[in-house]
Length: 310
Image 1 (tube, one colour):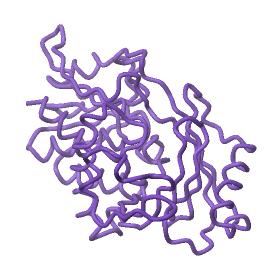
Image 2 (cartoon, one colour):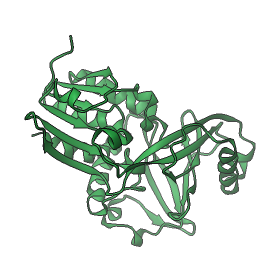
Image 3 (cartoon, helix red, strand yellow):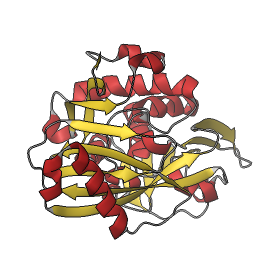
Image 4 (spheres, helix red, strand yellow):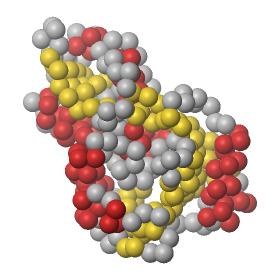
């Protein structure tokens, strides 16, 4: 017999868990239905540097990102359980003046020869997802492994359903504007690099970045739209390492310890945070379409979605 719920959140990645946590902390009885454990979601694969990357609508993203930034800055005071650290690095070719109004709120950002130097949250996602699950459990929320084939299944068990299914929203919403953007990463033994670096050309599917995480140096990457492959491509992996080694030559000799592929849940019309009445009288709240910045906007979007729950 399933537990009684005021809200069922469908989707157990960073967006679903964060939304569920806010609702549970308000005193609502919350269940999360997730096909996969958090460690197997797209969120767990993310390189997870806070930055509004490949996400729309621009008019709303800034506020969502800054709200989330404030939360991460607080969590970084205790990185071991939260997985959040403040780490310095450079966005190559980026100019502060060319960014949106949100960028003026970045602390200590400076223009250097290579681009924009700034200290930002870098999140160890497996650790952070466990922290979210633990917080949710302490607030009375329950995470259940369940494959959902129709959101009506959740609507039959709770008066409010929150759709945080990412790519799954393409079929479940249904929303044909949701599409995968494939990201491949390589993890190597860190040869002593303690700062992150990114270089992204919006016109190219190839990006270059390196993120020093506790489990190794994460190298990237790709942004291949409408590519649903989830297996690592060996040639792509070699190209990623070669690009990163041009930035930091010591990477060339680093031992490869893992490969990752994640499908970013992009949406043609940008993030969808919207409520609709269901024919049976229930409420369906959508929170999906975060593209490459689900971690960056997690708290801001969760707050907006939670407000629609009422």
